[in-house]
Image (tube, rainbow, N blue to C red; front, side, top):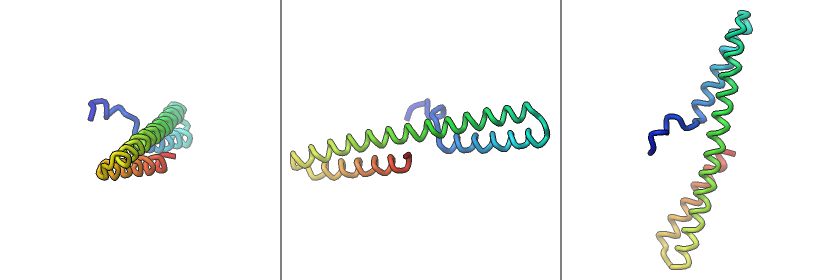
Length: 103
């Protein structure tokens, strides 16, 4: 795992910032504090963007897993390597599930 994991987009973090931004914006609207309203809008937008980016990255990773898994399954079938074939099928299925979660 790389050290940049903390800066990678996260669906959970994106949802948190989106919700927090909405709450701050609402407080600003109710109290007339325009700086809070603006700050909340910006945090909400940043949270939504982070969520969408994390979702797109998850879908792309799922696609890569499906392709790699299909390749391994085919090579395993052609060469008679049942373990490689089974492993490829599992990776393909994992990728399909990841795509479904992120679509």
